[in-house]
Length: 326
Ligand code: KG4
Ligand code: ZN
Image (cartoon, rainbow, N blue to C red; front, side):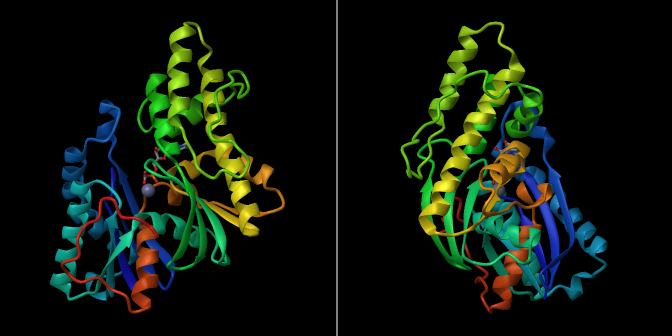
């Protein structure tokens, strides 16, 4: 099947074409305009999607070497995400579906992040544990099969990506904060500042990052001549330590020996290396960098899987800004 994927849940406009489980073209346009505001402005994000989507679909099809008429289905992010940006993508996809007489499927963005790992390694097998770490979510999932997911634990407050973004703002860095903190951390001492690790009672799979951000704020207030490299490296380490420890506990609880890391924070090299090192006996997978942050390849891939199974959405399906996975 040849499926066009469309992703507009936040500030990345993305389009991709998947054919029989392989991505043959994928385009991502990150909206740099939000940098100057230090965060995503929903109304601007919607307008940017609206402005670029049509041309991006044309370019993606051209790159794939296929015409619109060859498409056999459309997959679009239904949620979770920002209402306005989701509406922009879903309305565009519905128009295409109606105009071309193509089946359409609304895809769960979180589920797509998990399935991006099958693009990274097609030999991945169920069951596995997924650490889903993005700007809006920090969750541990026991992935038993497609459409069979058990939530093992999640953040009580800020998501890990949010902790990076808010920490970066305190340190005077640009948005999105994750890559900025990672860059500044290079060469810094991750043990220089003892930032707190919350909810570390053995086998507790819940997370909390809001206290960490507050302690960074206090630290920066008190230490006027702080070594920023050391502070960034220590802050990053505090987030990563917790993530890896809880992933390890989750694996032990399920008796699973394979795990994947999904979502934007999975792009972090220290998290990737640390996980490999501390879970050396287990199979650890994470997608290519371009598949960790928001993209349409994962939407097209998962959409094709469902369409192949005969599942599709009614044309009047709603957007679901708070869409859950299970
Ligand atoms: O999955 P994603 O692209 O969008 C959401 O669905 O939220 O994740 C975005 C988040 C942001 O908070 C960003 O700071 C974080 O992922 N991120 C990183 C890195 N690259 C992106 N965090 C840490 N290190 C990175 N290299
Ligand atoms: Zn995402």
